[in-house]
Length: 377
Image: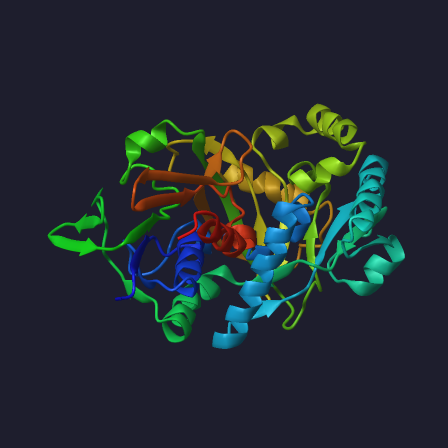
């Protein structure tokens, strides 16, 4: 009996994760990508593998599993990563109360967290603004990779270790059962996975337009510190991040904090701004971001939103000696019904996996494993 074949459309992190899971299931896998390399949301992010943002249970476990897979891949093909953890900082009493409540909740559920006072934070990490610093919540489970380099190298791992093939610069425009069409080229596979991210218009547009899915545009920046070899020592987050991640809803006082933010910083919430900093191997600092929801966006970034990010950044980071070297935006799919992903089965041989809402680096590898197992291929 010949080996069954699979085609995955899209070489972003969801497509790569799906190709890995299918190969481990015994399929001969080919990934078809419209560009000469992945250039979408999968390379336009912080590079944060971020379990702390996921609620306890399925999603947290999925994030931990994804981190394990990232490390396995990285160790195999030489992708840099740093298990640097994360530090959420409090500069107001209500933020500090929320962090203490989260500490109690996370610790009770077995998470590796600790509370830090001002002195211990300033002793342990660089670049933290000491003015009005109440304390912070440190979590050791978070990991940083450089998405631009990592996403480019994962195909090398899949090719070398799992015999996955890649076809670049090829846009699939039609699927009919087992058959796929790209211009004059035709392909065939026993199973097809569409992992096309924010492209909701090329394949099955009518089906996708009926789903609770939209798009999110985020603006980000990259800086270099003026001092060589200068490192923060962790990833840092301001208070606004506390109202961004679902896991933080475990804090009873979170709504009271959000009410204050609404009253004092409504323009930040209106633009979905929360500010975080990650640092890559070369010392470059990625800072962001904003969240704008629509199905089509102005292609031009808004400097006043970047300025708001930078103004808030200064409240918790000593960034005066950072030089901006890049700014950009990314667009990713986002579910509007609070679901974490979208799995559709439009034809007997075809599946659509989408809608991770900016959590692809954190969840995709674990999700792909679960998905292939759940549909019992």
